[in-house]
Image (cartoon, rainbow, N blue to C red; front, side):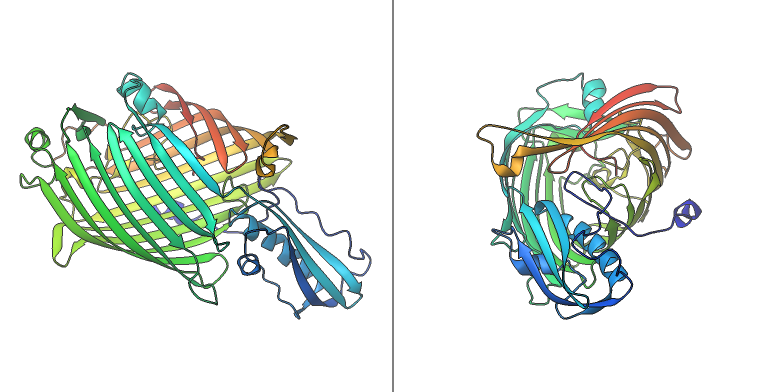
Length: 476
């Protein structure tokens, strides 16, 4: 399994607009016939940033005022800088032009169009893992919907800070606050994030049987959890990120859950408290993070759950993933995602079981299953063709940030492969563990503005089952 992951290698990237990665057009204001010489960057101008501070944009530029640089290298740097500015997710469009002052001096002009930054969004979502889990395992019960309000304030004070508030009701009630500051120093390398969450359920999964979650319904609160954490971030280079996170988690279950599964928290306990400490390394060199077509991303997470005065659980995990996206030319693209997860010790409470079946970490075609395991491996490959790529304008009383609606449609085929080592003495879930599971299929991806992706997929898995799946997130 590890050999598969290590055979994938990285390469450089490119992006154009908020719609998605496209070919960068070399500046036309620079003389085309005198490209092989050195020039000095006389000045850098930022235009269109009404809220965003210039330093946030300049942070993404690899070129400085007064720098002397070989002209072909300048164009390549600006090509990549444009992608970096777009990947801050602060702007709808970014244009970078080079203005020739003389054969030896140029100005750089960065023109941006800011996004809308205030989003009070109603919550109306399924509480289940995905569409098929809700449609098949829960008989498409519309009572299994969470509702409320999620408020996001992006780019606070023009410094790319974020405030998130959530008030959610229904079967799962949740209240939370998150505040992040990407840079707290003048050099813009160090950042911090704080968050606090509380949730309670009157509908709770208490065991997995035949790889299907079993749920208990009640009018009483079955599960309560409070968690808080603080995260320190360091970005020393453009594409490399380091995070250290420390947190506290306190959970309680109703006695009915404990009776149904005495191993939910282990030792017949109804409460669990622990501290967490994790380190995350990310190297993100993708052209457009909302829907990448070129580049790569590496992410490694090392985490310890339980230490110090709160250690109702003792669990160490290593989680590494690598995604690579290749532009094959003529609007054909290939993407591959590999993930390895390892945990120790093997004996853990049911509440801390992990495996394939959550969010993007699943084998497509197995959306209705949870394949839990102490260790697992996942590989997903997608080959796609761009069918339509364009934009149209909305009219009427529409804010400028929403008037230009981009759209892209991709036809794709995919193949996924996964393997999970079963937990010890977990005999009720053996059909899909300790063996390879795989699937293939076809689908459509519809990409539009503000990083929105609609996925329509039809797959055949190794069990001979055909499934249609609908999702509102990119595949990986």
